[in-house]
Amino acid sequence: MLSFFKVNAVYQIFSLLILLILIRMPVYLVGLPQLIPELQWMLVGEQINKGFVMYAEIWDNTAPLSTLVYAGLDGLFGRSQSVYQIVALFLTYFQAVYFNVMVNNRDILAKRNYLPGLFYLLFMNISFDCCTLSPVLMATTFVLLSLGTLVKQMNRLEATDEVFEIGFLIGIATLFYPPAGVFILWATASLLFFSGTTLRQHSLSIFGFIFPLSLTALFFYLSGTYEAFSRNFISSVFQLRQYDLNDFRSLLATLLLPITFGVLGFLRLVNAVGFNNYQIRCQQVMMIWAIAGVVSIGLMPFLAPMQFIIFVPAIAFFTVSFFNNTKRAWLAELTCLGLFAAVLLIHYQAVYFKGVETLVQLKSLKLKEEPDIKLSNKKILVLGDGMEEYKNNYVATPYINWSLAKYELENLDNYDNVINILRNVENDYPEFIIDKVNLAPKLFKRIPALARKYHSIGNGVYELNNRI
Image (tube, rainbow, N blue to C red; front, side, top):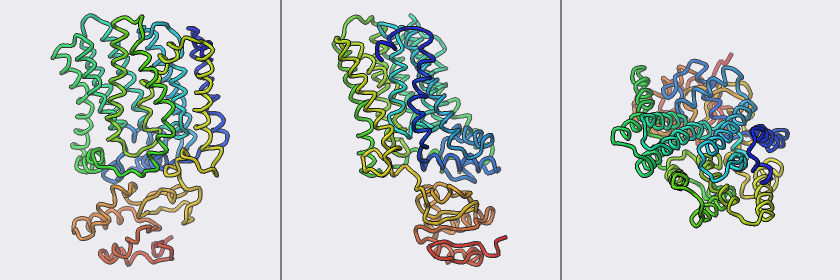
């Protein structure tokens, strides 16, 4: 496999596409489990197409540009998991090809080949949740594009005003996935240490980063929804997260192989010879990329392998260095085949061996196949964690994201909260209220007008009176 992709030929671009399809086809045929965040993104897109305003009438912390993509897909295809997977496949392929072509055209490695694209595709399939169209996948595209512009600047005697483009692309990435904003520090440090950038050009790069963020804030301000935008999106980026220990165990089991080969590749480069100053600077830029990725972990909304897609360019780069600096060709081939087999085993086992208890099943990320409350094609409000009830139903009221909604719904001693809840429910009455946290009795006590509208049918479920 290594020897095949070491051939620098145009047809390798198509070989990468065929390889990616072959890797993912087995899980596509069986059917990937639907993920909780995946359904949440679909619901957001669905609500936007119904005319509800993001953040003001849809309480969720999905980034603005991601919501536009999900709304566009919902408008064209409806609530379709397959569409998310197909778009994600082609976006992954584009990233791998762009990364490989950029590395070759800029002579970042000693020899031109297609190993960067090979390992990029491999590590983009480390877990089944990487197969969906996540905000981090979309954001990584723009951070990669900024890397291409950055490397171009480093290959010149003097930097140009194109540094604005670097900051702008990272700003766009941030509007898809907020933790990507950390990479403005990566770009600034790289330009400072490894290029002849002036103070004016540094300012241009920072301005490029701030520009799309400012335009977005201005849009919500002029539309009168800036307060909701700040509360449901900006504030949520910096909230402290509480992660389950099992999340860390699953991540460690999933990411151990890529991280190991990335670190080994970096260590091989430390003592390697035969690189010019430009190539050494590029290696240092990729090292800073990995450090920026580590910093971004603190801003991740939840822990899952898909969130670590942002690390893939750096890990793939250093893994190529590991295999390029392995002297015995037969040993490199065997190691590569073993790495492929191990990664694909991790990828497939969560889909094919559902009944087997392993560390990488990612149970906390999957929707329950059968919700406890069986309703279909109804407008519902769920009080509490979990999204499975929405799988065959529709959202009523703005309260999609429980982690945001609970601050208003659970604080019923605040008069403004009570008024807001009544107004939000009256604007979009749910046919059923599913109460998982025993909140409805207190809610009805505080808001008698709602109590008169609903009656209990047992198991924490309340039905709207005189429903047509």
